[in-house]
Image (cartoon, rainbow, N blue to C red):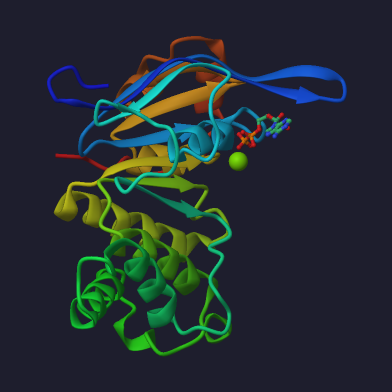
Length: 255
Ligand SMILES: Nc1ncnc2c1ncn2[C@@H]1O[C@H](COP(=O)(O)OP(=O)(O)O)[C@@H](O)[C@H]1O
Ligand SMILES: [Mg+2]
């Protein structure tokens, strides 16, 4: 989205139509969006507007009915080593410890090229990044929802991808833990210069953590801009109303 920096993710004229019993349903239409390397984009919209559909395309889990998605100048044709996903249902394996859950992801990516000591070091480092060193030997049933979410994030970080795709990853967290996770994520983004596409249906969350905000309505992007653009220069009545309803959270500063 920034013209000064390199384009890293490019979504070009993307359309996604699903076949349903009632006929074709167009979930995404005319989607054009560019994300620069190291940029933090919050994709926001009400339930059912097509957010997960778009994230699944970026993750390479599905293919668009029209248009192209590129990452690092290559067409996205499946899951790739430069992209990792964090989802709302963190899907941890219940019998494995936090360490083992993260280690599995590390093994998948690096087992072919690195020895066990390196894999273990990567796992320890990822757990440390999200503040879970002390909980490494606990199982999912023994930790809080926020900690489980952090294990999910550690798994994505451990895979050491350039891009992290997050689909309502913090939605199930209670407000205090959620704010804490948002701060941690911003810090990680700064320190590791990850490219992050963060889906949320919460405008306050988007304004707080997104350097760029893309607003999706009924499968179309209605505005892409900075938090300041969205708040002070809404592109249309829909965005203006969306903004008016917000409860008033602080806007984080990206620099
Ligand atoms: N595989 C599918 N088949 C048919 N319709 C789908 C499919 N996936 C999503 N949809 C529809 O597309 C719309 C957007 O869904 P989704 O991307 O999950 O929304 P969001 O994540 O913004 O809540 C919804 O109306 C949903 O019912
Ligand atoms: Mg969704």
